[in-house]
Image (cartoon, rainbow, N blue to C red; front, side):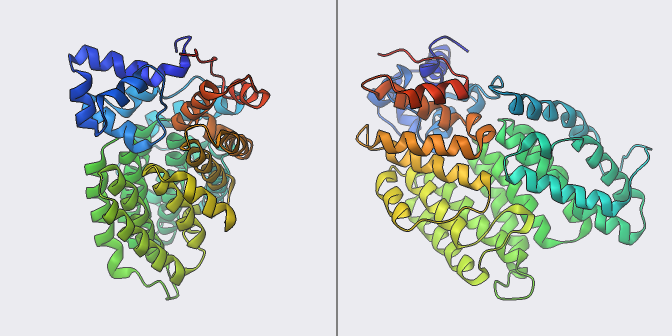
Length: 409
C-alpha cells in the first residue's frame, strides 16, 4: 500500500491502463464514463462511490475487481486479524473436501454440530467474524463426515447444517475481500442442498453463489446463476403458505437482479425486480431463513443501495431518514448506514457532515465489515480530501480504518 492511499484505487487503475496500452478515452468509453471523469478518478480527484463503477472499470481494463481495490487489506485491528486467520484455516478444506471424500475423524453428535452452525451464522450476521469462524474448519469437517456416513436422519440433519456452515464461510470470506473463496464455499453449500433435495435451501445457496460472482465483477455469470435459482424456487414459492422459504429466496433473487441490472445500465429492469421483491416481502412479512432477513425492511434498505448505484443517493437517503427502518442485525445496520453515507456524499460536499456521521455510525455498528469494504475506505478518503479543515471525526475514522492520510491535490 503506497503512502498516498487516497488515490490507491485510481492509481491502480492508471497503472493497469498504461500497462495495457489503453487510452483514457477507450477505457472511459468501455466503462461508461467520460475520459475526463476517469482522469479525475485516477488522480484521486473523484472517489469510487459505486460498486457497479468499479466492476465496469475492471471489465474495461481486463482485470479483476480485487486488482483495483487491493483486497484483502492488512488488518487494521485484532478482530480483523483473528477473522483473517479463519480464512487461512478453511481455504484448503473447502477446496479439498467433498461429500464423496471425507476424512476418518471422530465427530461430535450431529445435533450439537447443527446448533453450532446456527450460532456461528448468528455471529456472522452480527459482523462478529472471528467468533463465527472459531474452529469452523472442524465444524465443516465433522458435518461432512456425518453427511457421508450417518443414518438417513443424521445425514439430513448434517446436510442442512452443512449448508448453513457454508453460508458462514461465505459470509466471512465475502466480508474480508475473498470473493473467490466465497464462491467456493457456496459451491460446497449448493452441493449439500442438492444432495438434501431441498429446493429452498438450494435457492439460498445459489443466491449466495451469485452474490460471490457479483463481487468478482462477473455479472453475466451472476445473472445466469440467478436464472437457475429462480427456476428452482419459483415452482415452490408460496409467500402466504406455511413454508415461505422458497418465496424468501425468490424475493432475494429479485433484489440481487436489481443490483446487477443497474450495473448493466438497465434501470427499468431494476425497478421491475425491486417491485417484485417488494410484493413478495409484503406477502411474507419479515422472515429470517439462514439470517438473510428477507422482508419489507430489507427491501427498503436495498432500494437505497440501488438508488446510490444510480447516483440518486441524496434524495433517497432523505426519504429513508424521514421513514426510517430498523435493521435486524449489526451487519445489515452497518450496510444501511454506509449506504446513507454514500448517498449524502453524492451531494458533492454539500452534505458531507451527514455522510461523516453515518460512516462513523456504520463503523461503530459493524467495524470489521465496514473497515474491509473498499467503498467505505474510498468514501473516507474522499470526505477527507473535500474537508476544508482538519476534523477530529475524520482523523478518528482514518485511524480506525488504518489508512494513511491522503494527499491534497
